[in-house]
Image (cartoon, rainbow, N blue to C red):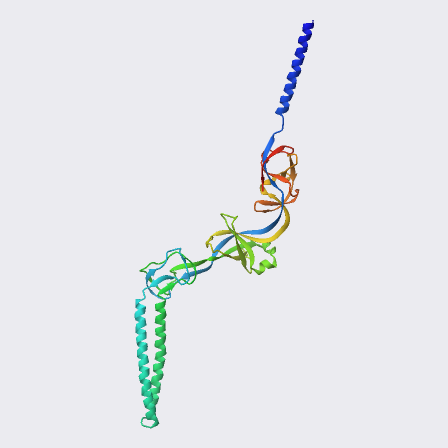
Length: 369
């Protein structure tokens, strides 16, 4: 009887121990996981607001290089795409015909001057004889008319010499400004004409560029009087690298909207001393409109959307998360303005949302600065 009692007690004790172990294992099995997340601090920041518009760059000055005299193109002094300084020779036209023409004009001028000198000497003698009434006055008058005609011919010959010299000078075509030359349209040996419509090449000043872009009627209404006066700062960035911004200024607002597109043409100017941009390039233009002082901002990736609207996960002091509804404002770069729902210095989750739900514990992997 005593033996049966001991066995029964032992079996009961073993059962209780098994139950305890099972309960402990269940608790460990249902323990809530700790979710690794990345975070960012809610910050106060002055946020500028912009209009954004696609734009196209154009050279501030684009010149077509055309001949002012005719002849055979003898020499090209540059390579296509080369940057040229003002006054650098570009083309040489065969000058031999113009040298001959100049010599002929100078010879005619010299003959004309010699004839005038001879006629003046005769006029002096005729004047002396006329005073003594040794010759008829008619001869003296004829001598006056002759010298007047010769002096008129002198002016014409001087003009022909000047024109010949100018044509000779125009056989050398030099760069009219600093800039980059474009595609060469003719080659040595070709005959060119002063009246031809096709330029020999083009030259663009790429150190100063003009940007053309448009805005809508709604955006125009938000422009300040300072904008409309022009010379207002703008920002230009490449479509390939929006983070690298170049400064410019607004220089032109068109006088009317395009009735077909409803858009207003604007122009700006930017310095391009490093030649980072080229004419024809498409860019992004930003016009600063206003600045929000002490705006509450978080990274855009911290904000998620459900059926009820926008929300963020806020990390509490005990390292658990709370789902917080927020009202958001404008997006500025990688940030977004939060109008309601957050206070400065709180921590919000920026990565790891998929496994989160309110009340879960988190492990902060990295705090974005």
